[in-house]
Image 1: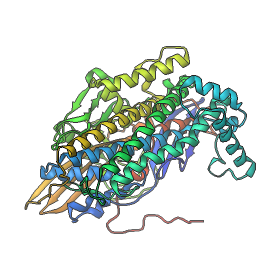
Image 2: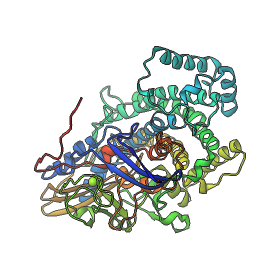
Image 3: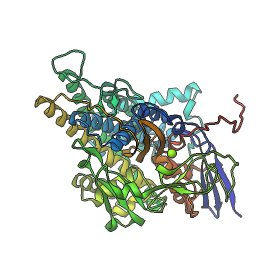
Image 4: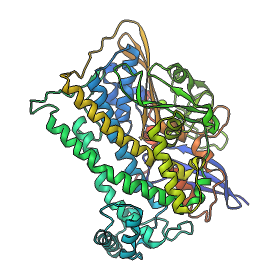
Length: 566
Ligand code: NFE
Ligand code: MG
């Protein structure tokens, strides 16, 4: 007999997500992904000055704080065919890469590792054996007996205090937890260390963006960082070389800790390379523009239909018509009035809440499609597309990751294993290494350009009479993000954001095809329906952000529902 599992809300994510599954004979047979929170940004933008849209859209999210700012200025610049100075591209690219590194480290260690790592078991690990294991895995200087022992004592003190806090309701001792106590202890030690490293790389964002979360230095037409190597109150060589020390410092953590831990989790949970593939049409956009018009990029992107890498089609520029015409959103199963599938420039947003209906409307998230089909976005899509584009550094890191998993698992693990729950973690670590190399390159490009005497950071925009349409895309940490703007006589007439978590968390589309979260859950084995750890493993592997996925407001301010708050 089948039974229902409802997880509401899913935790260790951003925003409000409800996952409902039907389980039969120990496996998920049906799944629903529902965004239950409702808020507003897109309609607030109507009639505003396009130059300030980025400040508002950035407030969509407190996690991917830079990305909506970046996509927004790109959308308006695209509508105006406005070029931006090279220094502005390089500074934006440094913000993008530093933020991405921070985001990926936080995701693996703090938002998802505890689905795989048992903290209670870590208390039983022998610190000396753990140090020996760590030293076998990598040359990381903080895999020392002293450091591991101190981490274990910290955990033990927490348990002894009886105040477990956020660790109180973990699935400790669950039968799907498979790591030995020493592996758990090593991972728990890195969990604590990762808190320091995510903070240090985020300083790059704070220095260039003036603050984080929510940077302050963007402008339609460039950035507002004044560059003057001889002044104390601008972006100086002293600040830039301090940034370089932060970039250099984090490299060892990414390569010797993050990449190695993901390989170990992949090898010890090798069965999870066969679980959680879901939607295997992948979309990723190119990013890190290398010129002032956005026609060449440091990292490539494109589209892979139905998991077939040989059918990869590249997306080439900020003017790309294959991308521009390929994106649509539908609302057949979403809480909006009607049943349509439209291009973002043509959408109108009229909320209409009906309550959760299995075969009707059941989510505030819309259903995006690319070329008429659901697409998975995120680091896995990004890495597969870069691999398909023949990007050599991607091939190098992907091969290194797969070789590391193969040697630990004692069996050959190929590229096909990436189409899975574990594959999403592996791809995120690979992408993190690529972003780190790119950050170093962008830093060097900026230094060299300043060295040539170019201090320009801004081209002022002018808004002609009449209508202009623009789109801006960005490969955000959770995947492809695009903003779509229609400008009329210098004011915003329509604004739509099609966001990474909207692509992945979307409900069934106009053709009733499941969204990526839903499709990835079907077939997942469930050991104990009362403790659905396996569902969380797959959902967390996408790194959900429902704050991003739903971002509209009811313009009439009607009351939708009332809740009691304790
Ligand atoms: Ni709120 Fe975000 C990213 C964007 S959405 S986290 O990355 O855009 O999924
Ligand atoms: Mg939207």
